[in-house]
Length: 308
Image (tube, rainbow, N blue to C red):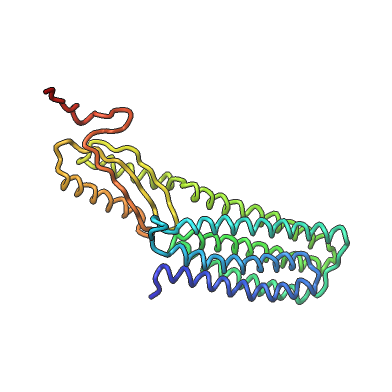
């Protein structure tokens, strides 16, 4: 049975192969036909190929264990990959917008409409199947790179559908403006879709906290633990497939270290059970009194200093 890691790598290999096939077909037909819409789809597939290959190496590196140089692992490379991928998609969208404007200004005419239509039908079917597969892998692994891959192939489904409709419309009406409008529209949609990829990647690189609902569940676990007096300094972040949690727990002064450690282990287990699809690194600081700025000695009396 495939492990989670091998499933992620396999997904990038499959998406790279599909992108390579579609790139070859669309690029040849796009140049032959002179259709901006088909050429736009071809350029997008070329970028898909490079992005999918990059994703494979990103995942391979993010899976490497922590070492003396990267004490917390390389999980953030997935976020970096998402930012780079979003940037590449944005550049491709700008290029396609340029091609649409150029065709409008030069009065270009599309050819081989019948072959182009068949190519786009095949492309639409293959891409739809790939999106279904990638969505399943993304759901199983919660991997940011696979989610990004699934998202940009999902945009391909919509763009391929739009290209197909435009080719059919041009075939029956001979109105090249339809091809120009669709090609330009696809480019704008591609740029818009890249925004979420870049934003999510940047937020992870900036150590954004975990989702609000997850933080509420963590606070609920801490609030319901009867063997601690209080908790504070809760901090969370995520990198790759790992959630990081830091928190201070306030115990009674008289509790033994063994008992405090037992309580902490129990809390860690409850937090980890909130999402078993991800790994957790939980760092709990044990306080014999409240050392927060608000009340530094709420649970332990001030020690008496004897004068000699």
